[in-house]
View 1 (cartoon, helix red, strand yellow):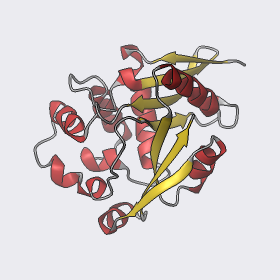
View 2: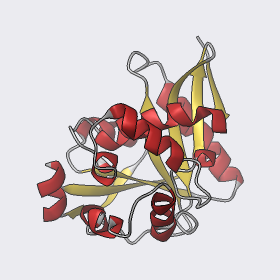
View 3: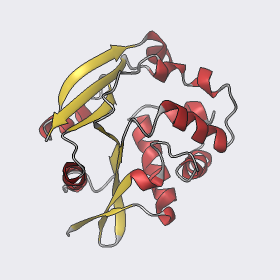
Length: 207
């Protein structure tokens, strides 16, 4: 079965929301969106995240930032790429407020803001690299990454970065197989209290 990589369309938002939710939890009971939307109900969260991917504010969660992998016409994986100089923290907060979050969202986001890195705005960021269960180890994520790096090179980028949780060994190993290396890490007590993980790690690759 061949893997087809294409840009996401508005009709893909429900699938994107499912993959975003899966990625944000990273094997934990709660992830960022459980915290933001104050729910553990998958149906509720998918509906809210789907709306988040379509806001006027172009946050990094916007559907236009995504590639989708297909096999036999079925969507099986996603990868988000965005420019941190465009998809800023303020843009994300604005998008969240568009879908009904109050100004108190800044307090809710504290565990993440305390772990923030000083990102090079001329790099390309990767996020929400996910595949459906049952399609692991068939090359979906590698195909998504190769397509994304090719597009990034044509746009003049030479460095790509991603942020993962400290202790996400499987994810870290996968990125390292693709040529990424650790640049920095932030251990945050508030993050550990909320999610049971020490904090976040910044990985990068030159291409």
